[in-house]
Length: 320
Image 1 (cartoon, rainbow, N blue to C red):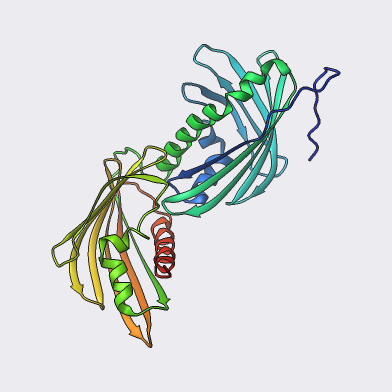
Image 2: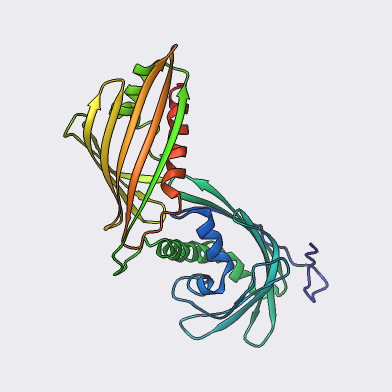
């Protein structure tokens, strides 16, 4: 794709460095991709905090338009017009965009690349935005892009949560889902059991250190015992895992029921069964989970995918 400097000045202005951002969003990559690729959702988030978006036109195909008018609280309008340069659902898209003022004066171009991948807690979004100044006088606008994108992605996170039913809603519903996973670890069963039931050992794999601030952690693995993990993610969202142990057979079986909350909203109640079996110095682990997803929350497979990541992290912790 050609990205030429279109400034009328004889001396080409110094072009800004690309902006690079990474954000964890609390939804599946498929949901996040939909939020980027449909006008219905783009209109609710694709502008900084306090700004509004209108006249949104989005057609998710290579060459399809991506257009909107972004208006400040003072009423100042800027038009963003461009097209989809790449689109690979649900993992990647690129937008070739041009920003102009209300009079039609071209200000700068912003080539925006978005990559999405599954990650513990949702989807990892990697964004790279490369700029070409068309009017050097608006360099200050590009300089403010990091803060603008910070609040814009905060809005995106709220939108994808609402799309999955994780926001405030008056809907009353219960949708059930079951999944089954198996792993074999090349360590004795006693070591796997310790990783599942010892608080210090479990801290090495259960969660996403560095991505959130720990607010509360307690663990008491016995029949009638409780486990609770509460954390605040980079986006400000607070998640709470609150478990009650129903059956504990050392080195053989764990059965527990747990609730999950997003902020103050209870999104699910689940029953999890872990069965361990020793086999020639190795350990077979079978995990079955039965979940009731509540009041409009659309899990869309997130819980199963999240558990896959956790079991991989458990395996990595056993190599230490």
